[in-house]
Length: 423
Ligand code: UD1
Image (cartoon, rainbow, N blue to C red; front, side):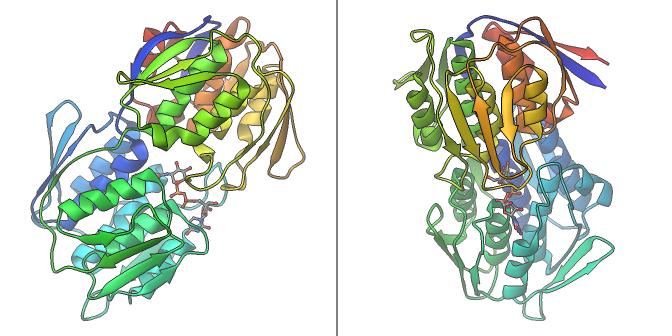
C-alpha cells in the first residue's frame, strides 16, 4: 500500500489554483443521465471518486468522452440498466446519488446500500423518505435498495428533512425534476454544491427555485435536455490550502476561490491571528507576520456554518496555536478518528467519548507513523507532518487521492517536502 512521507518543510509560499469541487461534480455527473442529450461538464477534477462515478455511468449505458483535460462529455441516449453495480457502489458512498436520477429517468432503480463508514453510521433514511413521498415504493433486501415509481411516474410532494442532509437534498431534487406536479423540500441543505446542482438542472430545463435556502421548490417538467456547466470551485480544497498557509506560518495566494463559500474558515483563521485578504488575483492567506497564533473554538454545522470536512485540518492547526481550543462536531457522530493520530505526533487532545475535543495548543509535533483514517483526516495528517520534527509516514493515503486533485504536485509547488512511496 502506498504511503506519503512528509518532512518538516518550513513556511509554504506561492500560489495554488483550486480545482472543481468533488462534492459538486459527483451529483452533477449523476444528474447528466436525466437527459437523452449530451451534457458537458467542465473543471472536472481528476479524482478516484470521479473515476468510480464514470464507471457507474458507463455501466448504466452512458458514453463518456474526455474531450480535453478536465472536460467530460456525458451522453446517455438510452439507459441500458437500472441497477448500479454492487462492486462499484461499495467503493464510494456518493454512488448512491445515482438513485434519484435513475429513478426519475427510468421509473425504477436498484442500488446497493452504501452502509457504514469510518465517520459514523451515515444512514440513508432521509433519501428513502423523499423517494416514498414522491410515490415510489421502496424495498430493502440484502442491502439492496429498490425504488419503483407508480404507473403514472413520480408525483410532486412536500418533503420535510429532519436534518438538512446534503445527499438526501440532492437525491430528492434529481428525482423530483421529472415528477408530475410540484415538490417542496423543506429544511433542505444549503451547501454551494446544492446550488451548483440546481443551476445545472435548470440549464437542462428543470424548474427549481430556492436552492441555497431552507425551502427548495421543484416544478416537474416532461423532459430535460443536454446542457453545459462548469463545476463550482472546491471550498474544502481551498480551506485545506488556507490551513496549509496557517499551520506553516507561510503565505499562499489561492486562486479560483469563492470567498463567500469559505467565510467560516476565514473568520476562524482571523480569530487565531491569520490575515486573510481578498484581491482581484485571488485570496491571500498571510500567516508569516504573526508568530503567535492563538486558540479558538469551533463547532461544525451544516452550511453556512463551519464545515465538518475542515474540522480535522483545522484541528491540526490548533495544535500549534497558543492556549486551549474546543472543537465540537455536530454533523457526524464519529469524526474524531484523527485525534489519536495527532496525539501520536505529540499533540495534546482529549475527547471524552462525546462530540467534543479539547486541544491544548502550542505544541511541537514530532514525526510519527500515522494513518489517514478518512479523506480529510488524511489532509490533516499531511498538514501536521509539514510542521512536525523529522518525518511523518502516512498510511492509507488512497483516502486522500479520492478527493484531492494533484495533491502532491500542488503541495510541492508551495515548498512542501512530500514524497509518495509504494509500501
Ligand atoms: C456530504 C459530503 C461530505 C460532507 C457532508 C456534510 C458529498 C459527496 N459528501 O456527505 O463530504 O462531509 O455532506 O457536509 O457531497 N443523515 C441521516 N439520514 C440520511 C442522510 C444523512 O441521518 O438519510 C445524517 C448523516 O448520518 C450525517 C448527517 O446527516 O450525520 C449529514 O450527512 P449528509 O449531509 O447527508 O452528508 P453526505 O451527503 O453523506
